[in-house]
Image 1 (cartoon, rainbow, N blue to C red):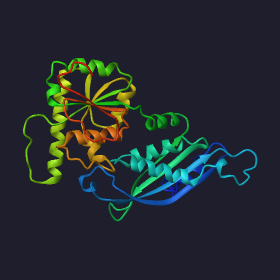
Image 2 (tube, helix red, strand yellow):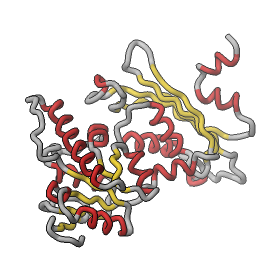
Image 3 (cartoon, one colour):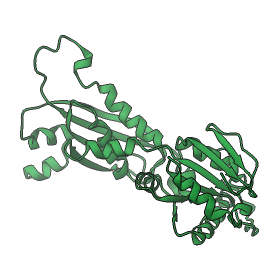
Image 4 (cartoon, rainbow, N blue to C red):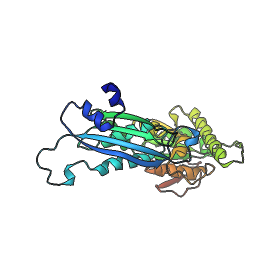
Length: 305
């Protein structure tokens, strides 16, 4: 077996040592196994599977004595915390996404220079399936910071009466001019949704009915772009784009999902506003929901918000 092939299957610590160009110290996390819901296939939804992490972090050698001071080193806890925080942030389909986010977060640590992350699924058969990435500080720390520090938006919920109102454009104009990024949310349209008599399939249909109404709103104002992923939302908020929330993916992928049914659209939107740490939930044309963020109500007859 050639060295290249051997190293391809070696532990990340051996790969790190073989590829290092400068003297460095390394800390490693080996065979760290957690149970998590992850995967793109339908059979992977609603079930936990074991995922194994092996992580090696290269750090610049310390100058001067360590003095047995934990604050001078990169603690192992920071590595396991990085994994835990990313697992709790949202349900993911891809190990590749998880590996990227864990690497980004670790590289935010001032001591970290390069990181090797190997993640393997252990329950997909009589074998392990996995990915391995290596990322260096250059170009990674800023990307991680973007992921971690999203702005606090204003969520504006529009009832069907508000969507049909002659005041719609004026409300959007006023909300766009305010200091926070704007995300618009809607409920189901007035049409009756298909009924399946099956909880899981009905939930998906009810979410899709809300998304249909989001597209109806988008057709009324070209500034409103329908988005469905957290990544799209983060990009849009940072670039001044008005979003209309399509809830299916974020709701279904949430680690700690909403207890509210999609048929209770306002409760669902209140959950979403708390998830994205909105500075305000502005409700136009409906009753105020219970929410963990400040709520403001406006009548669908009012011209000003």
